[in-house]
View 1 (cartoon, one colour):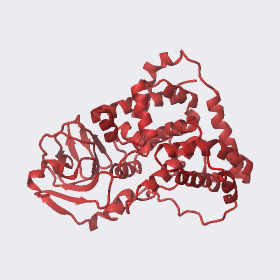
View 2 (tube, helix red, strand yellow; view 1 turned 135 degrees about the vertical axis):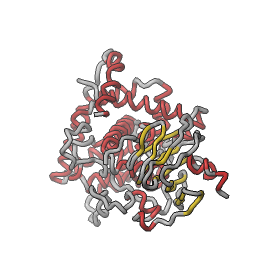
View 3 (tube, rainbow over the protein chains, first blue to last red; view 1 turned 60 degrees about the vertical axis):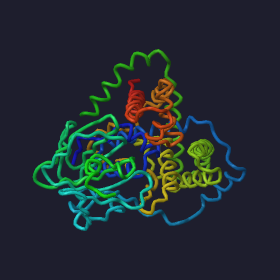
View 4 (cartoon, each protein chain N blue to C red; view 1 turned 30 degrees about the vertical axis):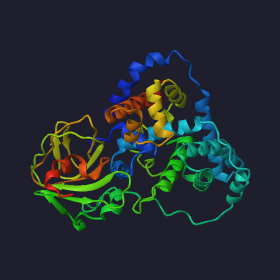
Length: 218
Length: 211
């Protein structure tokens, strides 16, 4: 999988700075797992962070800090658990690893809720930074023209959609803000499953849900 | 391919102005010096080398974490934890992929994020090695550290227009989200993002300038 649509560099800078709200950071992590281009971009952003950190004026540490550091060098403790790596050939039924804590491991086990005809959704629990959700839109569905009042990041997981920005297939990210208006149409064939993050309040949560708002009793 | 085109188009218009001020070669020498200290730590558990790293970086990491709003005592604990990871995982440090400053920044940033994210589902991001692509040898590594011009990056940071420098500072030094920056500066969200994007383009061009 080689994505053609990536998060905005501003979003990667924010990720690098530790400034991205959780819902967005989870989506960006999922994209990074499959996108070498963005991993290189992120490394450049981290290089910037490293340079900025190194240029800063040193802050004094408390008197015993250096001795405490020295004392800990002989410490033996078990290594932290091995890093979680996304397998190169992932099981097609598996969600990207960063999404699994919020939605479960497999597509087969997802418990969709219908929020409008042809539209299903699952909201992630316990996310305090932004709103994180999965959306499943029936194939060949046209979403009327609309804009955004907030940041919205969408990662296509299955199926595809088209809008004025192009064709969005699995792995692609749409990084939209308040200056973009568009009209997505899901591709025919299979439903389009997306993960979406927004920093708008839930009742105005993004382009699909916003459109459907009159239909949904929040 | 897209990357190369973008990099080239970003280098050209900025190249002329950059030639006016002299480069600062000591920055590159710094990166090499710290890599050598790390090599000594990795190969023979060199405590003196490690403490030289500590003496230089710990107070700077402390400043970074204090700036992000971490309390003094917690910041010191995080600094010690970050430095301990450097000590324990020195063999994993690869100077061909990143400088020590970059690696330490990742470690400290990840520790900071794990500290502030109290959400039960947040998956701790560990020690910052996860995206280093060390096995991906098939590509002629366009992100390799050898191609990074640290003096060029430093200069590009110094030369950012004030408005862009401010957004970079608010991101890296205060961990402010786009939306918070937009609200604080009374600026449209899209403008915050496009300014950050332009600033980052300049920093990348600085990193890749020809010597």
